[in-house]
Length: 503
Image (spheres, rainbow, N blue to C red):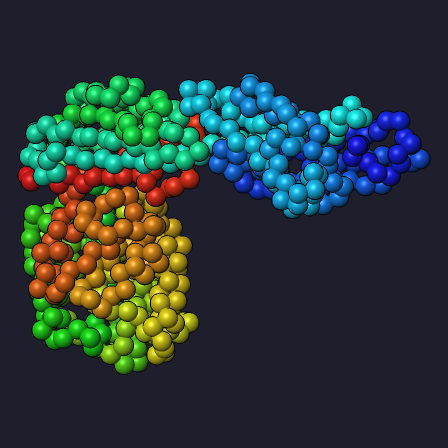
């Protein structure tokens, strides 16, 4: 039986199929046009969608004429041709010996990782046996998916200057459509504080180019990670440009007066510590914002100022700044987090030192959840539900990122959460930046972080570690830059380790 039913007397069908590309995981439509001798207009058609899902080529009948089971199908993948009748691969759910509306024809195949470059598309041809004519032809694009992830570790994160450290990079394929990730390339360019000595791959996965930072691993099979060892010597710390640090403190009533004192004292003592806060070379700019209030509101406690060791500098002398922090009064009241974020943004942006080329780090310290909605044109808010407060804070976070033109390679928005009150998943997923965030420590993984301490008694130690990493840490990162398999998961395509020299 022929596909057309319009005219049984017609000796042969005159018509061809339009060439279409069927996108991976997205359905494209292939039309069958059947023409009669009586005129140019099609009297009937068959509508079929095609896609590649995993390692299956799937065709679905979505309308028009039924197709006979003896319609011949030819499928060519990576240079290998498979042929047979529709009946070989059709799930004939209607049990009527025809390919009807809603029924699928599924052709399974397997990728060969060693020949992955040949898997570009599937060429499909369907021939009506009775008329001996092609009724379907066209390519289906292939993009095999396989997830590759990477980690980086160092044997000594707190070396002395002059020490040799041993860095290990691991690339793992978690699989997908293919039992491995094809021709993976990663970049690990050593920072200028580390002097390259040598490198090797104990698993035999390619070689490392120190000048470009590129490691071409070749294929990485599931269950067989690729390893790279890099030896480097720690050099004297390179003096950085000004780091603009804004600390946003929660001053709401949920924080007791005793805990407020602990927070102030911890921050004050950290600034006095020359091993933590670099006031000697004048590269640390500090802005301090407090939010809270019965109004509610947010207020500036310290306008953006370069911290120095010059006792004749009435504005930035570190001891005066530290003493001022110890005397800050607590606002109390609600938790207008969005107001604090907006005020910090404007303070950083509007002062004379701001530059998008400098590093901006925003640290939010809180013990709870926002419960106020920002009033446009002010730094105040009206009381509201927690959900409304969260929405207001998220909008403020967008305002901060946009107005400071934050760069995801240098800038951060992090949070130190105290006690059980903060919503850690919300802070991690909706506030910290770059996203997606993660739970620290470590305090640098290429994205924003949330660190939770159980009580305010732990605040002093936590803030010292955080500031030490911000001002003294050497970040060594690794990122995925290429693969012949499509990587579906961006979350594990970047990793970093912090090295903080002890002297």
